[in-house]
Length: 196
Image 1 (tube, rainbow, N blue to C red):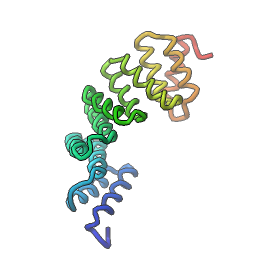
Image 2 (image 1 turned 180 degrees about the vertical axis):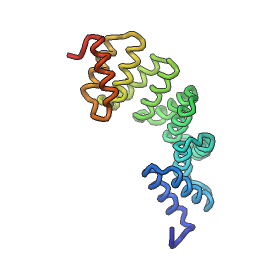
Image 3 (image 1 turned 30 degrees about the vertical axis):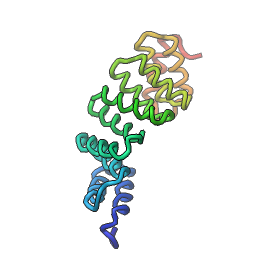
Image 4 (image 1 turned 90 degrees about the vertical axis):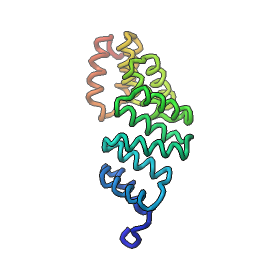
């Protein structure tokens, strides 16, 4: 960048590094520099949109995702990012539609299935949430977050046996980063009959 400040690719790579390093403000500065140097590529639109979403600039993020979508409506990541941004805004119905489009385009998109389950759970569409979490577990049977959330949903809909099984499986596979969830799962499992 020092030798060629008009190199949009270098600015984009620097923005990606800042984004990965957890500095969305500096990433945004770099992506804005890319924007000034010419039309943004689909990847640049996505990355800048992600930067805006992380900075809670949702309108700007959505506008960039829509522009990326106009360039490539078959990119499941764009639909995922739209869903994630809608969910952050509390627009769960729009999030569900975007996540469903993402998994329709990529049936192995684990994160989209999980987030779909989260949005459906928020909307109290428990059968839909169960189905989404089960799809996540079909792709990764040891996906700890899905096991825990599935236990939560089963508990809410008063299916104690399924809740107990989900919590027990979660406790088996959960690592150290799930301390609070493990504590809750153990307490709830004890109230349901305990894991054997």
